[in-house]
Image 1 (cartoon, rainbow, N blue to C red):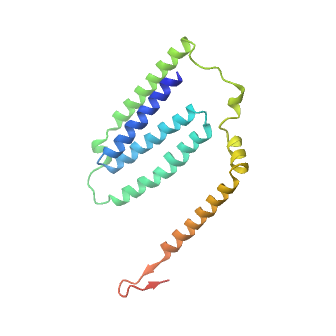
Image 2 (cartoon, rainbow, N blue to C red):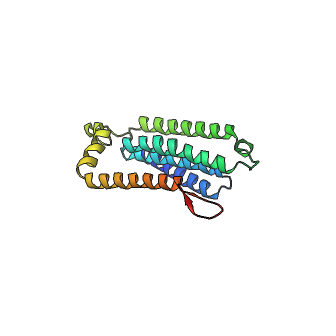
Image 3 (cartoon, one colour):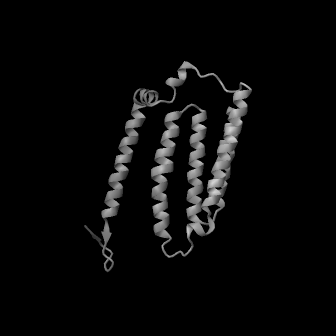
Length: 175
């Protein structure tokens, strides 16, 4: 069963990555990127990294992609092409239902043939928030702090650049 799930997620990741790159519509490319991130989260689940899978969905596929879509929508204000002219919602729903039915068929076959693995007692601690935090704040504490300092400096730099205004006539800076 695990190999079928891996193959399904891998094929979905490759197909959505190719669809994202080859698609001419930027909104459809962003939606393909969301599906790619969901398939990568599925791969994380197969690696028993539940925390990373959840972060992949919530942070990347959720928050960051919403920002990407807002920027794309703002940049394509003059574009008359609408998202739903080419991209039919019914095709998305049918595809998702087909994937769910296919996954249920595979799960049913694996349950009948005893291919599903036994869950070990280590599964309760692997990939949890506590396990990630223990490693992050002990083994990688220095790298974590350096990353926090760099991100803070980047935010301060972005604010400084955003407040910078040049006078269009003279080209000199204004505060």
